[in-house]
Length: 394
Image 1 (cartoon, rainbow, N blue to C red):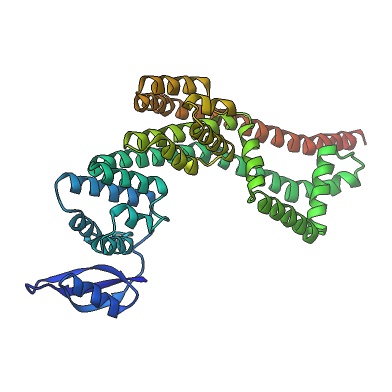
Image 2: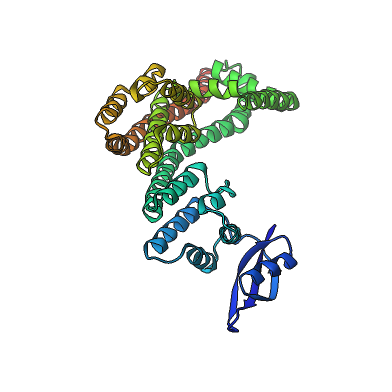
């Protein structure tokens, strides 16, 4: 199956252009004939650019507006597909074909999991079931935009410390491999004792230069082994548990995961999806394996008859404040409002936690950079002054 750009005429003789997905031109002709179109010409085409999260958000937004205005779904999808250079044109053509064949929109989206994850499909299915598809699509757009804003905040917050760290490592490499070795020979000839930091740097340089194949092979072996190990279930669990114990970053990860958990569950539950189904879908979205395992164990306890707080509390992952608010919402029958309060709290708390963690990390990076430069500078200037002293004495 691949996308084709086609030109056809309808029963009134009007020309129509668009994109359709088919195995070949013969199948394309059959598909267009079923829609009352006569194929004039067609050519296979590639995807119109990269599909980004923004592309999917815009699609759901346009669909919510179109459905809210009373436009039939098929016509709305066709209009979106044929408007401009849409990177999802081939996927939309396939979705349109499936709907024409009697498939629901949610099932048609599920056929393209690369661009439409499980939570999107579940919400669309809930909208179809409740007859509030346009409203739920707007909620889905809000959720996807929140997720993208969070990603942008994290990328922006981590860019500066990463640049500082790379600059520090680059400076250390230049000084250690090019500058200090030029002076070590002079210091040795004059009988000046080389400080321990400089000797360590020179030894590291000699090791890398003289035995670089062995060093490279060792690094590749260790790195490859760790990479393969962390891809196993046990390795991922250990890795995620260690991440949660990191200073500063551990709290950031916990806050992000709980915020993601509560917002997903709030959107799903408010859309009419039962709490157990919502928890099951949310557990697949949570990225940290420790938090995911806690949610999965909570699902088992809920099925055994426990309340939501009783199910989540034993894992000691969720803060007491979150558990208390969920318990109050469950007791009063207003779980939607409780989840909304938690999400609003984390909407405010997560950026602050990220900001504080990145500020601490930036400070640590600056201290590391300054300390490294001072050590390397002293390794050079101390023997240099000793050499000048010995020359003056002579």
